[in-house]
Image 1 (cartoon, rainbow, N blue to C red):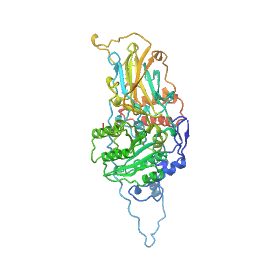
Image 2 (image 1 turned 60 degrees about the vertical axis):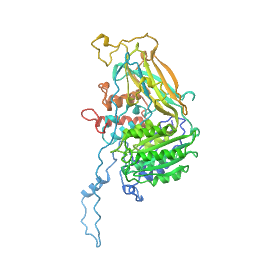
Image 3 (image 1 turned 135 degrees about the vertical axis):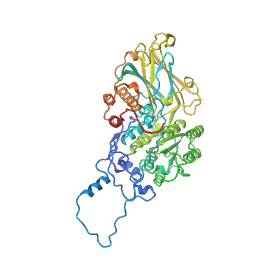
Image 4 (image 1 turned 180 degrees about the vertical axis):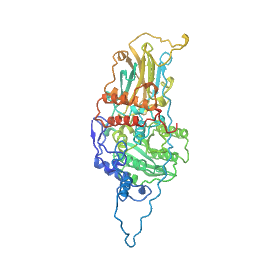
Length: 591
């Protein structure tokens, strides 16, 4: 694993970064590492800007702020605290000198924005009886935005709303030791394993893992990228436009000579600033000139971005829009369903849409996640320069290069061995059984090096399950079928880039996995801990008394505690335990 180290830079401290971390991609990752000096040079002009600079004035000095650690808490006193302490200290009385002019009074404090964040959570998936519903079908999900957004809430000292928690995105934020594909004729490998369930001795956990093949930097096709940047007034804060500028500049630094980058902005009106440029210095320079103000004509900006993408379209290359915004559209088309229809029409031209969410207070995650899903792209939430580096530098190939599209998973359980099951997460990715063979039904995409993990909790036949016994015998499920050696049958459908007909992979899951199931270890233990954490945040009643301390113990037992991201997760469980409301459920946000 390659190590990318960052010292505690002032530029990154403003976004909650004082760290030295490891990149989550294993050996063979091809991105050019951004060194401390390079990251400082890229981010300092944006993240060190004062509030005055956001109004259009030139930056003329560093912001006098205390550094912020990973938990979001200030190290030492704030400037206000220091001023208060100075004022309290005894001072010698001085007579003003002739011509002395008292300083102007400080400006009135800005009103705190109301919490208008919007989420659209699904209810926790129901328990299914195998005798009645033996088949489970869903679309893969490689988004990670829910995890970093939950982290942002906890760093702010707030418990996340239940609607903001998507357990599958939290599981898929982390990488696991799945075998790489043997060759590219099948773009991803399939792994299955099983363990006992830490929170229920009567059930077992079945984990399904996919891992896409990776590509070297030299192999990546040329990219036609459109940076679609929200510069409206709602982006006026350090965790919004300055962080967008830093994010996009880091991505521009990774350009190949064959790549083309356009920059489109929108506020009350839209504007194409750069079209199809190959000069990274020009691109970074233009990003530094962006200022926020005005209303938010997001739909018009999306349309102009698609126009720019078509103008610079690369046959056989990557053609993608990266929308960076807080999602607060308030001018023109603001209805989410209409925006989704627009994106769906445009994706047929071979142009995908990635959404990058920023900021707090009025963040519209419900729209950001859905636009990416329907735009054949992925969604990430950027809460720090560190997360920007992870999503747009370390995971660059996964973000840009799609190796399989419309990927669907279907599991058929054998009623002779499994009586009940539930899929942990993926509530908004559920498909009907008949959708699996229908190539017209849209599903998720897998990028180069991407991983997808799904965990089922299953009840072995004959064990106590969740569902109550029905009164009338005719209403009781009857398991049919011989014993057999198969616990379940796994099927996957996917399309290769440029193809319209799907390909099918089938793989049995042996009964011996259940017989040999032991307590979760290694990566299985960590994935299970993440799954439990997501369920605990959502108030999932199936966890019983399995609490945050149990989650931490399980995560630590997996090993690799020196990994920055995994160690950070353990810290987040401690924050969540302290911040959980008395009623044990989340609050805030709108469903």
